[in-house]
Length: 456
Image 1 (tube, rainbow, N blue to C red):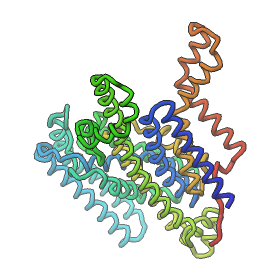
Image 2 (tube, helix red, strand yellow):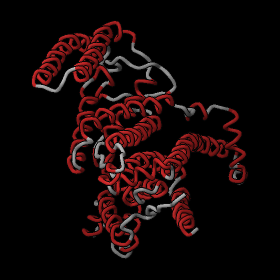
Image 3 (cartoon, rainbow, N blue to C red):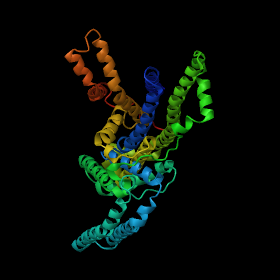
Image 4 (tube, helix red, strand yellow):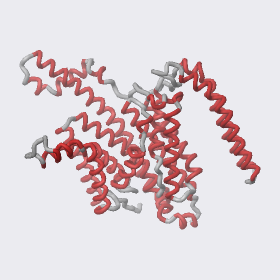
């Protein structure tokens, strides 16, 4: 019961803080923070499954997030017919060549005993395949990227609703996790962390430099949205009527009809942005609740207890006949797939795909801080960590500015120290993040909501 009270109290405080942002700043800012907290919560659940359930260190979260964003582009963008006509055939031939090479290598590994001949044959096949792929793909890629490079210059996608990309993003990330897991899960924990980080950097480098796929660093903008556009809402009668009724008290205080209409127009503009963010909040909240239910069921199932047993004593679990590598691979795929969903959700909200924005600080280490602060091994704790850390990350600058002005209220603005402090406000987020993490590690070393083992 006390654990439940702790969860309720922690989440209540978090919601009150977001509401206070809405009251003292704006509801647009509050809902933006809330939506990003929900996306961060999905990422932390993916990382928590890997670390909290199985003790796997994955520093490649950034790469799986980017693959989710890539899925959003491939699914939602309309196909560029001119680009497909110019070089699409070359790309399809390369795709089939890759599949053929993979199948041949798999056949060799399964049907021939390990030897130097087998090793050299596989190496020769890979090298010759890479050379063949280059000569096949290069003319097609150049032709694709020459098709109106200022606006397109890539193949485009399937032109489907972007919400389908959330599922496809999970498959993209899970597929990469399968390959990475097969190669790297046998490594020691620290080597696994380095390997996953480097592989994620490779993924980002490919996405940034292969313009034919997603325009590279030229970015993809104007992606389809599952929510209505603000400009459409602002010219819709039912929405204008809704805003007018919601703000009837404020409008009645204005006697001049011209001023009242001007105020109403401004309220409609502000309300349209709030309405769109509320639509995203509803969609993201559904995803978080579904994932929370599934992860909670998994955590307290026999499989979840087995995973924690493997995490706590891998040798003992192996001696009991459990296939440790297989279970590690499964949970590595599941956690990465959830991160892929979050990556697609992020691009869906932003409406644009910017490969250059994927950096380890934001999409790997900050996510790990969220899991640690919230409490690894506890799904509610991981979600709370996503909320708390992202809230502090965004609001640290306004809080710092308020505190500086409060404590230097009697000092003129021309004072060098005060001016320097105000100019340094953007950097206070790193100071506050560091202090917050130190305090959590000192007084709550297992996180705000630590793992509780329940026998059911």
